[in-house]
Length: 574
Image 1: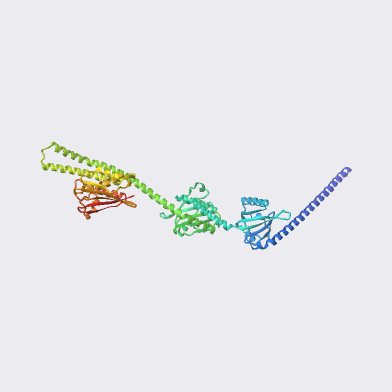
Image 2: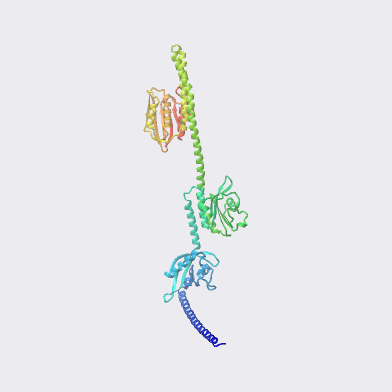
């Protein structure tokens, strides 16, 4: 080996020795640093234990007897102490295993972020109150808790731990959630009259409460003996509210059919083991079905499904039963409204047909009237020409026969006019107007012939009533005409009076004419019935009067004495 090579080896050995010494020095320094940290940590822990023991001695009696969970943790979240209630709540025992509060946070990013932010605020402020959070227990149960916490400081005012009182509010929160979902459902259906809108709101509320994408509402169709799907909430239908598959189930088919028949709610924990299960869109493993009952009669069914087995609970069932009870009245009301509207539409269509038919009938009556009157007028004109052309030729008997023919023709023409008037009493429907009967009576006096020996008196001011003026004109004209025709007194009197009877007016038209025998009281209101032969009477006038009074849902009757006169009474609703 050359001298140069030996020198190189010596230099390398020196560098190695130097590096080893340097490493030993660093190791010695780190060991000392670690020892010092360990000693400091030991001191801090001793201080913390002393402080906690001191506080425990002060608060031991309190925390052993409180009903809420209590725990103490260090600044890093390691649980140091727990009371028995905390052990029972979380399922962990700090005396048997290490526990960090991070493991208790519900495994969702939102929950974790909320917890970290709240802990930062705790260290900043030194306390927080009414912190509400979801936690997960050792048994993987989800709990809602309310926490009031404060920081523990050492004698140098340095934070060394945190302590908190934790109250389990799971039941209260569930109860509040139930109240909220029922209240929200009530608000969403309030005032709605459409069964589909009501059912949609129900399926939406139930799906959100149960945290499921599958909830439907069926309506019982008794006529068809089946259940009809009227609302469906799933991923496709939640936005459009459109039912993609309008399922109809016969009674007794599926779990839905069974519940509709029995009226008893059911929870199916595993649908794969139940032969009754019917797939709607996609199969699910859990099913909850609740009847909607009105007066103990099933009118519909709420059905929810979930992809997990054993998902639904008795608490879910009771809540949906509450919603079903709430919605039953509104749904029944909507069903009745739908039926009523259907009947109203049917009636409206029928009335339109009747109105059209009446119009056609009235037009036909006018045509027939014209066609019937034309030959009568021709005969009347012909007889008049014959008399004129043969003036002085016919003897007295022949002239009387011609007069009889003319009177008969006039009577027939009047009969046709009266028949047309009778047929138009109800057919000619007009909008109601305010009719002043005082003015109407004056108009009647101008239209009819009133002999000089007959006076018409209105005993008191007549009311203004709602109705068709033409009909009331026909009514009073025929009654007054009748009183004039059958008055044989030298001084005839016709008295018109009215009495206010709260919900209706009672009118009377009294005369001092020939009177009517009691056995004919009912007969006179029948068409073509005339008790006295008269060229001016067709036997239709009082029939028209009766028909008009009936049209206004009133009543008509009379009182009469032979040779003393007759009083006609009739009522008209206000």
